[in-house]
Image (cartoon, one colour):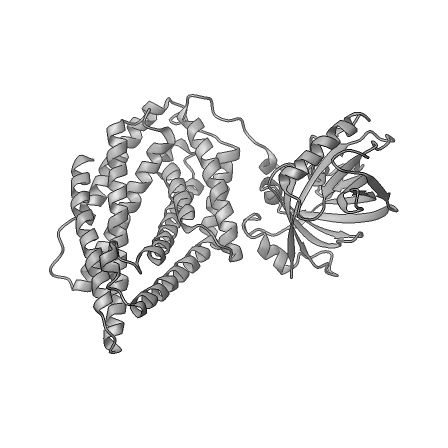
Length: 510
């Protein structure tokens, strides 16, 4: 069992032997209470490649003090962290399974090992307001850090630092106003906000950890610069939604799908920008797979919102309550299945390999000569591939039905072909968005976008018709009325036919 809270703190470097500043009057502090020093002993864990630190995550087993146990900290900024606590275990040499599970993505499925042992002599001062309520806690720390890798120096690193952490549910803006008031007081005694606020980062100084290194950004004015910037943003969005999905939280399925499609667009459409390695090839395939499974989840999310009601008030009034409730239950179940499929994909090796490639591309870019060209030159190559690919897939989706196959088989084939075309057009538009219509011809950018919009409506209608057909049959078999299903189906048939005509027009313009 774990508990999670928000930790808002600022760390100051204080000279050895220096006195703490007088904080009375700063940020509403009117009283202080000093406590007796105590000892903390923490062992920090990471993978052999230091994947956790690279992801701005720390995990430690700490004894001593009021919060002994296993701790996971995820940094949101230099001062804000999300901290998760797990009970202290007797076995100091084994990370508990629930801690490993909570770190699955950040550790990339790899095992953990001890990397640093940090012992701290801490003296706490409670900072109180005029009513005697605690505003924050000041911890004056004497720190000793010993690396545990084979190349570790024999002499530990030592330093002194002061942490000021807010208490209770303090708004981040209020907390930063407090820190701003304290900065001046600390500056007066020769202290300043720490350049490195993490004890672990200081303790790891000099460790042979390529994953902790970053590379310079590609030069301005190159396609590589835009690709790196976009991948960083997409990776952050994907990881935020992935954490919600894995924990059972309320993820935004459409945002997840958009991030996955965007990543597939960058790696797939701009494949020559990345090293010619099997790892990148596998990552491109994984990105396509993730885009497909998250796109279906986004479709399922749309059906929950859009299918139980008709597009006009007059038609909607003809749908009875039982039909609407049955459809809502069916679409929610479809969404639940789709979400389980997404979570299963996120737990697989291909997803972890994709994250490794994204990390390298975002933090340690090694762009090829092809990507270091001006965006317009790169856009010409991308257009030459994406334009015929989209045309072919849209043509397949809008082609004549094969009368030799059964009706249900034709419907399933039409949905699958339309999904492929929809993802291709959407992915192509996202690929063009990376460099913008300054690089791509505006007319082509708009036409691909129009095709993507039309296919979005068409694929939604085809999936809606599938749900209505299945559950109308169930209702009929159970002796229930099917009129409401027919009203909604007729509405969707009309939308599908309209989108078909628009798709044909869009195809002819691509």
